[in-house]
Length: 115
Image (cartoon, rainbow, N blue to C red; front, top):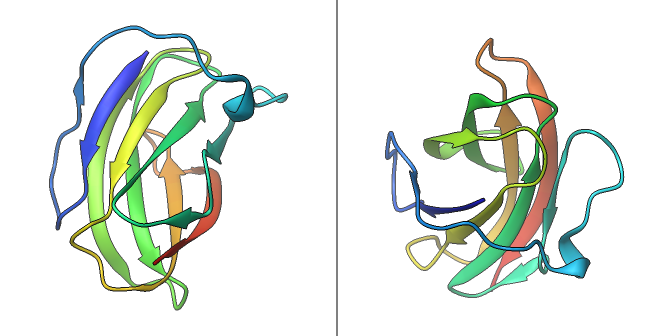
């Protein structure tokens, strides 16, 4: 599943575009997780969000000090979900991507650097 997520502020929705194979570099071995195509990002990056159930997740972009700078909602299927993160509106800095389930429990978290 591929979804398009635009993080240019606090958007509330993410939309699904098309189904697609997960590139080998984005495979996640466990039942849940998040993996970025690269941790050094200029304008956008692909990421795999793996879920153990079909659900609506909240994806937050946080500063390293854990201040939320962007928040979006995505519908994910059980298994791998290819998402695109657009970061051109963010200033250069270090950030975290945190994925929460529909009950607010943290599913996965990872860091990236906006160049």
